Length: 342
Image (tube, rainbow, N blue to C red; front, top):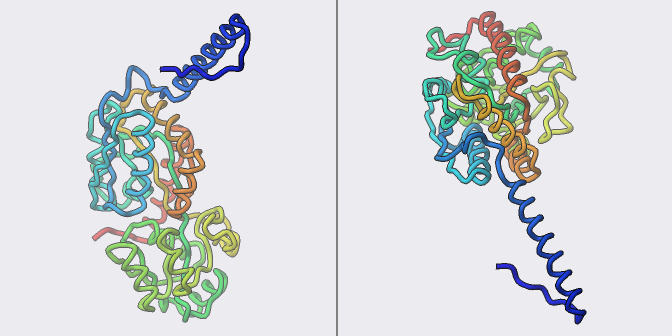
């Protein structure tokens, strides 16, 4: 019901004209708002709940980013996005479930470089192909890692770490969230490029690996920024570099490994949205448009940055190329380092 505004006393014809103009303007504005809010989804998609598989446990970076994305899609499309956590085997269990799902746009997966770029070379009998069994939608975020040392270690930067490690081959231990994780393989790449030798000590997750660094049981670790920041700010560990090609928004004054000593070094974690292969292209396009729009929204960006994640939307083609290039890059690291899963 439209409430008639209060007008000053005017001739009746003038009042009628103003009212008609106001109604027309209001209706046009309302129609414009509806059109702006209407999703560009094809054929009534979605008309029921969407399942988003998260191949890792609740509470981690993958889960958090999936819930942020799912909440915004629920808001925009008016259909619930249900988060389905299916952890295990480095993300491959959940990814396999998504790969075998009906390609109708109602099953998505928040994949990572662990499940879609590292796994193909790490698991000899992977039950899916990251390139053949998935339709990439968009990269969601990059999470840089901090290269950290225990405060007792007499190194302040990457060059000093390399010199120390070369002077005492095998004397330094480094922890990780597990064999084949980005933190593990990133430091394998570091050793390959720097000509150093350190001893890997894998843990069952990032938290115990970081606790070992804080406690001095290991001397080095590369860990996701969201987990590392509290320990860095408290002075319990010393951040000597950022592992990604670009500096981290969370640690803008800390230079990268590439800047300091190893040009071309780039390691970290990425998270992106996939659908099963064969999902209609117009649905993939609609999902891409909505998620990219979401990732550019200031409130979503700020929320992700608070989690140590840096929004990085792109096109399906660009995302596919990232997966393809990362598969090749990590395959070489795994082969040279001799990394195997237990």
